[in-house]
Every structure is written in structure tokens, then in C-alpha cells.
Length: 552
Image (cartoon, rainbow, N blue to C red; front, side, top):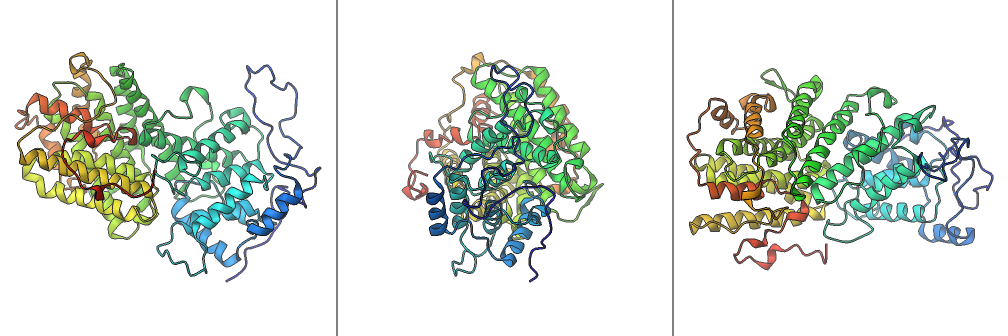
């Protein structure tokens, strides 16, 4: 194995191998801490770049002792770095492009950056062997935390890159209050990015690192919107508080097909952020206006129609070769299609409108099936367990409501559960979701066996259904948009034929009890972690259903 190429870096990063080697007068490429225009302390006329090095967290002798005992600053072998870097660039980079190959060309290598890279790459190994040849991801994780704690790295961009990679380690479930979870590290990274001023477009002017900084900012935006939607927590980034332009091909150092994955994922995250914001309006008993809801649907139509050919699932009616990143994008797209159906929430919702999320959920299951059969579930980001949960609820409902397709939807649900089972190996929250999905499935089966309507699930609002603003125009608009939202051949999934009954005006199965439709609307689309209060199904369940993770 050839050693990592060594050449002079493009930037003067001054990354000392030890704390003692850091000279107080060393030059820094760090931006000054951002202060808003309205801040009374805003520095007028000061240079954009700071020449000062942040003071050490601990006295030098203590920091040196910590490094000597822990070995956190020791660079792993070049062969291991190259192998784990290949894993990162192949499987993680398309969605989290916060490192470039050139980062490994700069000498001396940053211990913090290398440990972060190894953390991300080692977490995707199929083997969990502890033979000692490859350290456990937790070893790299602890090294990164320690290096951050003692302020070992002096380059603010490298620090932000490392914290973004630190957040890929999903060792906690969202019910655990912890300083080690993804939620915590994304939050810390966002505040650090705000401190760097990455939320302002003016920061990127004459900045030789503008491309990577823009990717860092939008990665944090994407993560924030996904976590806000999945956890049901307020977002840390508000649309009206930043003006950083969207990422483009020019923000990447080299041309590569994976660059467009991040660009189009970011566009989709903007839409998801708007959907989540609209859902919060329901919590405030102020549903989105018809114009707002229609705008979101229009954005989804535009997104699916503007996809580059390489990211499409079909070339006409012919399925393109398998590409996991393209499937992952479409899974997120179908999640958004399911979630927009929340805008139809009303007591007299039509049965026809419920077919859209059911078909979208079936499409998600079909795409996950392709990934599962190729043994690539391990490469999925942890947030995919939430995507599984979003898809599982319509599928559970459809098993009861469409007996003629019961075997199909049962198989779809089995696929979703198989993916969750594999994800539990490295994502603890997957076990929580899988347990909850199993309980909901049993509850619906119990209800069917006893010919009873289950108690309503917890909903994000306390509104009486008589007070809910009806939006028949939006429901009609959504039904008219079905063809545009599903521009795929029927071969995508076996339930695609349900859409034709909507387009043909076939309402043969519209005579479902209104109360049952209200129940479905109440909880089919309330799918964030904070609303997983499914104990309101009054039925016994085994204690073995509860994941054993302490408080996690």
C-alpha cells in the first residue's frame, strides 16, 4: 500500500502535532467571529481574517499529558487512512461532502481531521470484530471529542468539518438526554458555523474556502431540517435568518456525478423544511393557507421534473441501473409526498386522497427492498429509520382497508421491518422505532379481530375536528396533482395501479365511515419521534417490546 501523497498544502494551516509546538504568534486562516449588523459591538473597519490563535483550553503541560496518555493525536497508518477515506468518499460523501481528497494531501495532517475521517469510515464496516487491527468507531469518537476539548486544532474550518463528521456517529436514541447524540453535535456545529458567519453570503466574498464553507453550511441546514422533522423539535436554522445561496457544481473542487446528489438533496430539504414549518402551524391551530400548501406541492413537482438524468429512476419506461444515492433521494421525495397529505386533514376527507400516501409508502418499501437485497443497508444514514416509520403507518392502515392487496402491503411492511432490524446493529433508535411499529401493527390486528375502533392516537393539536379548517380545494388540487407527483411507470411498485382509480374518478371504495377516516387522518401523518405516544391503544403488550437501552 503506497503512503498518502505528500505535497505542500494550498493553505497555510499551521497544524502543530502537539500543543507545545503551537507558537503563540502563528498565523491563522480563521475568520473573525461573526457579529450581526445590528450588534452594538459590530467591529467597523476591522480585517475580515483574524491573525490570533485561540488560547489553549488547559495549560500546555496538562494538554500534553492528556495527549500522551490517550494517544488521541497519533495519526493512524496511511493504509488505514486510505481505506477508510475510500469508504467515506464512496458511501458518505454524496450526502455529507464536508471533506475533499485534497485534505489528505496537506502536510502535516491534522490529527483532528484524520480521527474524524476514520470515525465516519469505520462506522460503516460490516464486521464488528474487535481483533485490534481496526479500532472501534468509539475509539475514534472519543479521540475527536478529546482533541476538541483541549482546543488542539487551530483551523476553524477543520474544526467545523470534524464536528460535522462527529455527528455521523449515532450512538444515542432521541429519547436520551445526552451530549453525545447527533442532535447535540449538529446543534453545536450550527452555532459554530453561525459564529463563522457562514449564514451570510457576504462571508464568502474573496474567501478561498468559499466552496467547502458553503457545503458545510448547507449540510448543517439539511441535517437541521431532517432532525426537526424526525424529532418534532424546533429547527435551529430559520429560513428568514440567512441568505447563503444554494450550493452549485462550482462549489465542488472536481467534477463528479455524486456532486449533484448533494445539490438535489439540499433542494429537497428546503421543501421538507417548509412542510415541517406548515405542520407546526397545525400545532398552533393555524393551518397553512391554500396558497402555501399549493406552493409546497408545486415545489415537489418541480423537483422531480428537474432531476438530472443520472439521478432518475427511469429512462422513459426503462429502469436505470441501480444507484443507491438515486434511490435514497427518491425515498426522501416519497416521504415528503406522504407528509403533505397532512394538509388535507379534515373530518370529511375522501378515501381517494388516502391512496396517495399509501402508494408513496409502497414505493418507499420497494426502494428499500433494492437496497436490502444488495446488503447495503449498513450504508444508510441513521435518519432512514425515520423514513421507515413514515412509510410503515400508511402500510399498516392499508392492510386493513384494502383486503384485496393485503399480501402486497404485508410484504411491504415486512421489508420495512427487515431494514429496521439491520439498522439496529449500529443505530440504537432503530430498535425504538421497530418496537413501536410492531406494537401499532398488533394493535390494528387486535382492533380488526374484535371489530372495534381503536382509541385515537396522540395528535399534535388539541383541536376539535369540528373546529378544523376544511380545505376541500387543496384536497382537490392534490388529487389533480397525482399524475405529476408520480411520473413513474407502474413497474415501480405493485400498488401504482391504485393511482389510476383516482385519475379515472373511480370512487368505488369511498363509502368508509367518516369517523374511521378521521381516525386515520389523525395519526397517519403524525410521524415524528415526539408523537410516538402509541400507548393509547388500550391493549396488553409484552415487556420484551421495550428496547433495553437504559434511558436511551
